[in-house]
Amino acid sequence: MDLGRAFAFVFDDPDWLRKVGLNALIALIPIIGPLYLLGWGLEVAKRVAARGLEPLPDIDFGTYLVHGFRAFVVSLVYTAPLWISNIVAAILFSAVREVGQGPTNALLGIGTACGGLLVLIFLMLLALVLPAAMTRSAVFGSIEAGLHFRAVWGMVRAAPGAYIVAFIASLLTGFAAAFLGGLACGIGIIFTMAYYQVISGHLYGQAYLAGAPGSL
Image 1 (cartoon, helix red, strand yellow):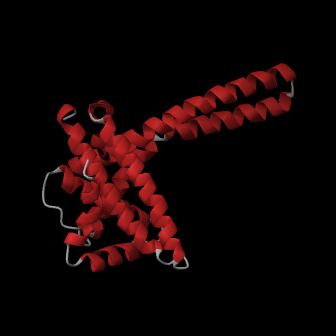
Image 2 (spheres, helix red, strand yellow):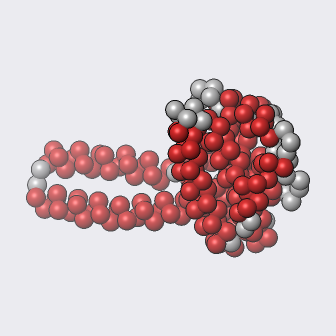
Image 3 (tube, one colour):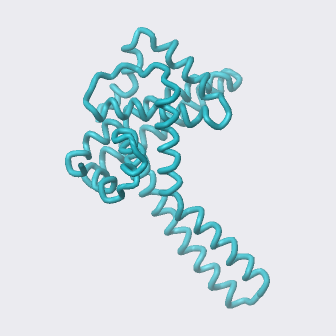
């Protein structure tokens, strides 16, 4: 993993300020803007994964919106266990409140603790698997590619260190982008979060390369 390259490649493009600025403004469009920005970052991941040149992508509304939409659908499928478990938990809590029995409440408490541990483990795995799935979806240009669970897991299993480093670096960059952007009365966050998106894309493109030989 070349962390320095992920942060610096943007500035190799002499037109980087315009590209980052305009794509950041597009991200302000309600609903579709965030999807577009996600797709723009995934285009970076796709280019890195293809071992091609690394020019900063310019505006391509349709292409990047489709990237983002595919990634959104993939994320819905991968996070399905979370929102399904929340629905089930809400139903159980409601039922126990109706009964109001001590032993039942005790069992529910134990179940909640065990469930919380399982959710934590799932979230840790999801943090590694979901970026791999979204990147694969962009690389192959289909939702199905992102939902090829065996191939996605094979990528993560082949290079767990790369995905862990990419996740931590992306997470810390996101915090830094939000903090620095907020210093300018919150206006700067529009720009810094766009920059964060392509950094994350580059990081996960590198992780894809590290894990791809054992997964394709």
